[in-house]
Length: 220
Image (cartoon, rainbow, N blue to C red; front, side, top):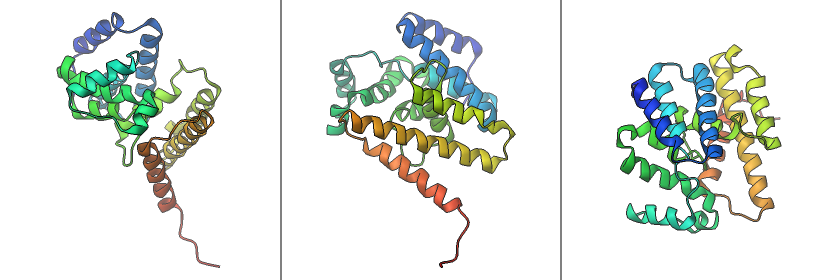
């Protein structure tokens, strides 16, 4: 992770204000605030805060693209979406955003920023802490009004992770993330949409971590 000048981040926000719709801009700024709030507890430090600000601000830069625009951006980078991604086009913006950052915002193309942007929608197995923070912040930021998002936001912050031990905090983050995947899966199933393999792998990875933390029990 690297630090950025305040003027660089201010210029990025200003640039996005003319490229995103008002609703989308409000969302990315809300994600930035949420990510900073979580990072104060889970990943303190200037470099982490700057990385998360960049990722939050840039994570949805292609969210308002059409499917054709996403495919054009991806084709230019030699990326061919999977059948699942084509059938669930909401996943495409994370892929195209990563490509666009490298092309149009090279000064912010830090590896940690790119990873957090790339996996903020589906998640993946073995997510880094910046990836987890951006993923969760995108789910529970205060611009979200969907009841399940509100519930998860209250579940996460209402438990006061800042008062927990480090071990308790990590378990709490993992449990809320698993809950978020459960919500997503139910919604996708209800809508007749496929579950991205990376999301399934992310949930399985978190479940395996949770199981490894349980005290060993003797067989009956």
